[in-house]
Amino acid sequence: MPVAQTINTISGWTGRHVIALGYYLVDLTVFIQQAITDKFKQRHRSQHNAHRPLVTQIIFSGVDALPLIILLALAVGVAFTSQMISLTSEFTEQTDIINTLSFLITHEIGPFLTAIVLIGRSGSAMAVDLGNMQLHGEIEGLELLGIDINDYLIAPRLIGAAISQLVLAVLFSGIALYSGVIFAGMLHSTSFLNFLDTILSAQEPMMLLVFTIKNLLFGLVIAGTACFHALRVLNSATEVPQETQRAIVNSLAIIATLDGLLAVAMQ
Amino acid sequence: MSRVILDCIDLLPHANGNAAYSSGLNLKLNEKTITCIVGPCDSGKTAYARLLGGIDRPENGKLFILQQNVWNLNKSQWQELRRRAGYVLPNSALLSSISVLRNIVLPAQYHNRVNVNQIERRAREILDWLDYSGDEHRLPGYLSEYQRRLVAIARCMILNPKILFIDEAFAFLDATALRNLSKRYLDMRAELNMTLVLATHNLSFASEHADTLVFMHPEGPKIYHDWDAAQRDPDPYIKTFIHANFSHNTGETGPK
Image (tube, rainbow over all chains, first blue to last red):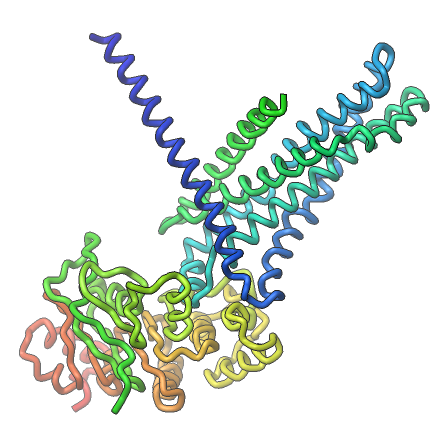
């Protein structure tokens, strides 16, 4: 019967994709966990050598992304924070406005927009870089010299991206909040500048802990997905852009899902 | 008596859609020897070089490098083995994002060998020894094929390996580069007491200098312990290959 057949086809397709998704997430999690574990197993390596790739990654993912993050944070400050303050200040308490803004920017907009920047800049670059290394046998060349690629290539990217995501999100949130208040004060009323003192006190320790965990997790997922896909490249140059595109799309999907799940968990 | 550096028993590669061999490779390599894996294109030289180098798992057989059963090693033991058993891939596989000098320093630095200055000094010594004439601060992408080859060999040599596998040992080289590299390989054996395993098309070098020849034959690898034995083999496949190569290159049938 056509209806039963259609239902069968749809349920079969859905089932196959759910199973494939499950396997993908397990593989990705094991990949990230294995890379971090291997990093700590290789602690006997000289300190200078161990830190060099990590510092390079933090410079690329964190320091080099600063201008873009500052620009984006200022834009959010002007477009979102200052308008929220000027629109809601007439019928809401100052503390409520700051609490709401702090929560929205620090816990939702900041980490998410920072993650998108990190995916666009670092995730894609990592996937292309490692993918090309894989394609040209550079990774195998390193392994044949007894170099653990999890220790030398993957873990520094994961840790560097996680630290960069956290620091950039802190900067983003701070700039977006403070610049918004200053803009609101300049454009509407100087009384809004009183909000500046209350921004820091609006941050609760528990929420800061969640903020830290969330951003570290985002950084690990972004770099982990990029590296995971890059190492799937085998022999053809066309696999590099294909895997890069998959890494970007999957990173976005995982980050959006994680963000939603964490938001629900925090209710 | 020479120490056995590599011992393989019935080593048989996976077919992988290419040539399927009916018999495995049995080979013992002593220290200070040169072994050449020779044969026509797509005959399985790289497959066997990778098997002997302990990179690819065989379909069947056992492999001992420096008295260690390669396929029983854990990850850290395998990494340790790789320090003493170097392998140069056909495309040299240097890290494209760092300079020549950093490429050579990297493995020694990773394995925690003394300080950076000492490693750099040692890297320069090796480059000099190999007669590398390029700029040590250039990226590998700006080097000639020959220079990349030398840097890849130097990168292995910085770890002082006992055995060195070189895939496509003489590929893409002009006559001068070929002569220089041949001399370096001989020096590695004579001066540095290294064991070399070279996968190559270069029958001239193999016929003159190889202690062991592994000839890729459709039925399975054939081993000769001197060139005369290879020439005496009545197998038409071997005869044709030797004749075609020498008449193509020199018009001769090989050294007498």
